[in-house]
Image 1 (cartoon, rainbow, N blue to C red):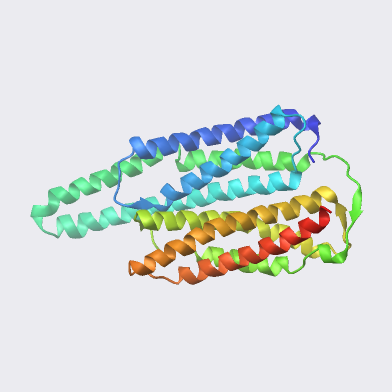
Image 2 (cartoon, one colour):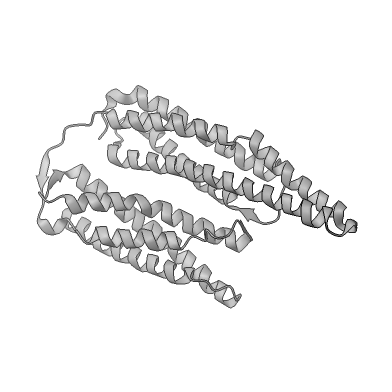
Length: 313
């Protein structure tokens, strides 16, 4: 657990996290009430809510630790969550760049083939569409989610990760566990879980309708929750001595348990949504990948809960 002597540093990291969270909230408000409304939803419109949720959780953790002196903060867990935050910033940055390029290419196509070489009677309507698209792009460039601000967020928040890495932790006694308490099968199961979660993401489409955006949100949230679990499962896999601090043992398995619960909820909802898509004639391969992810999440939950139940006795 992180020592209280690092309170000042964590206070600064909490402020940085709060500023990023405020920018995300301003971005959501801008997208709803300021930016032009385009037809359908783009990937950045979905990822901004994921990014906001992650930084809200981080800000709550830091604030609770600063306010309540009895609260413990696991160094490995908070570092992993901060890395997820940086990866989310990078993913949002990339999606925003690709989405704007897609809009500009689409606008160029309309100008050439629909206005200059198309029906002159429709030129005014297509010009209105192009104006809305270009106004949206300009709003993004000048808004709180511009690539310049995202770059600054990533650089500053990365400094926070380095600061967490250098923090001292409380000395803890080493506990010897039985060999069966280190479930080495969790690592290949987690790898399969992450692969199935990634395949459940519809990355071949740039714009989505309402149901499509819900599908993307569920799949991305499930993948974000599952991805760090590979590292935790690998730590268990390589713990051959069967000796470690109790906080490491409990923190690792509790994270995997929470990840499995989130996976059951998210991929269960995603699988149910894909069943509904079948009735609409929109069946895709993602019904299979979401089912595999759901089944593996259930299996991981049962195995981890069994180990935690034994340890708590």
